[in-house]
Image 1 (tube, rainbow, N blue to C red):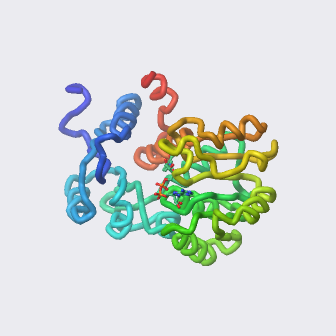
Image 2: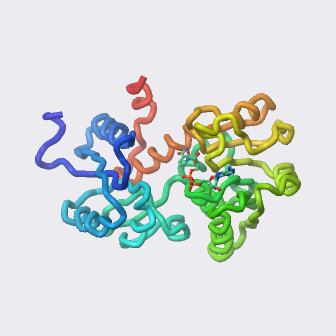
Image 3: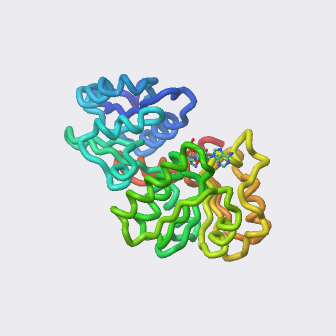
Length: 287
Ligand code: NAD
């Protein structure tokens, strides 16, 4: 450490609350050291109300970049100088990059998700995708799918507070990505869900169902799985959800949530330092 941190070392950081559990400092600091880059990454516990001061600090300390987590992602989007196309549509950002005082906000959950699909041989261009969920992860995925040329995005959500958000996403995408057909339906309309899954290429679970403590739950009956269907889950704990295990059994291409998490980190690293993250080396180091 005494060899790595010097008077020139640049600061990057995660802001939000809570942040104590975050794996980001370990992952980025390993990568900086591996690549011989003179940066250090820290995590700071801050509230939404403190975000204007955070932005003063980012500018004052000339931080190169960093991340925002809950509950600071939306307010951050109002405090940056520029937004990526996805961050503008969503009105939230989880990444910032400071280019000579101009701070750009990005949202990379969806980028990481799509990149992980592509790495697993499932490109989204011209595909029909059913997305279960309308929360933070689901919205980022829906917007990225539309930006990356998916033909159709069929959103299904229960009639909770997130349903309205799905309607909002549909309206924004109709304006920004009119070539992508977006539909919103009640997840409890089983007949509609069945028809949509039958007609789609890729099925995505972006709800909390399947995640601990809901690990025994799956939202899709396994009888709907067929060999040419790609089934993807955002849930990474457990690593293989019930839905993923049943999709594997049915011979589908089944893609769990761990890869999305990793690719999101890799996308962020690329934005910070313009290099490929040494992901394989970090995974080896973690063993
Ligand atoms: P969120 O709280 O913003 O959204 C929750 C979603 O779950 C909503 O769509 C809600 O309607 C749905 N939901 C809640 N209870 C339900 C029920 N009983 N039946 C059906 N749907 C229900 O959460 P989020 O931050 O978007 O996270 C959603 C999932 O995505 C989580 O499992 C999280 O672990 C995962 N995630 C993964 C990554 C990754 O990198 N792999 C990143 C972010 C989030």
